[in-house]
Length: 478
Image (cartoon, rainbow, N blue to C red):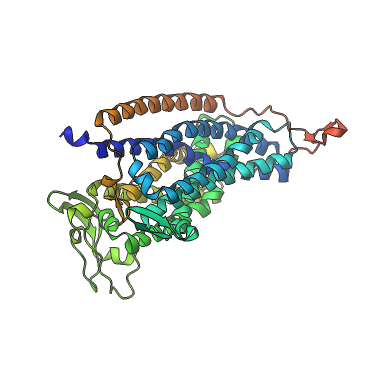
């Protein structure tokens, strides 16, 4: 059994999975929180309410912490393409390397270049310039998401060229960048990062409210999050549905694994939807299953004619379909369950707000509701990780779907070398994780500094003056 885990391909896959799963924890928060920082700073510029300024300063600390860890954990991922996956890089590097290069030079550098102004420029640049810097940071973070999703989507639905003698020849870069999966994948991930960040901010705010610390301050952030989620949570479910439809059309083996569907459902026959099951790769069936008759066809919008079959896993040989069916099946359901829970929690909280129960003097009475938000805080990370498991494990055995197999793409390295680097990365990431929890805890325990003065309006240097902002802060509630 141990020998099966000590072959080169398995260890290389395990190492890449470790680096990807761990790295993803940090940019998931920064890409979404960047948009939140733009919102609160815009509200400060518009209203001159100092509370919004204090929100921008407080949440920026968590942004900066996650940005730093994200950079440190992302570097090993890039090196792996040349070290552990050299045949893959040689085969598709002309396109794949270009897309990742765009992410580094166009997106990451934009974010990193303006980050210093966003963090340290409050007293050094005019407020409008600082606001533009915050916008550039948010754009850079989300532009990174676009380029990474474009590259990964190309692995799912390769387009824009053809393989010749084992090497991908690019014929149309725009077609490759805008491959069939790119748009929906980017929008789905964009909303996933935003929803995760909103629930993290809401969960942290709920913790302060439960502790009865800075109640007015964090009831405001709680309500800001809630307003944004009214649009984000339902839209995310809709985009997830569109992504599943695309899987049906472009990756039928992945869909069969997502639904643990072993036998093909013929045309004109409604397909049952499996709620829970115990898939067995060895027996090629589900040893136990709870399902709802006929629902899967409706979910895939085949209800109008039911003239299209839904292919089961047995349509392909074992070497041409995903092997970890149970992992794909349950990752998909966990993601759906968390998204549904988020939408329900948002709806319930809006209802409590509408009834006037979220006023600062009453919000602490909603202990069960605040505990639910505290519980929901980390769930977005789990949903995002599960979504990527479905996306990448469900693509197997292909690294480029239908064109290039994973087993053909790994470098021929001694297993001991990979095991050594894997162990080193595990130790390093464990240290990073503990450090992040430590410093994050210190930031949260300390809380916002509500004594920070409003930054002065900076005038051109030739006047040698600093004019303070004399507009009074508003005291009204959000």
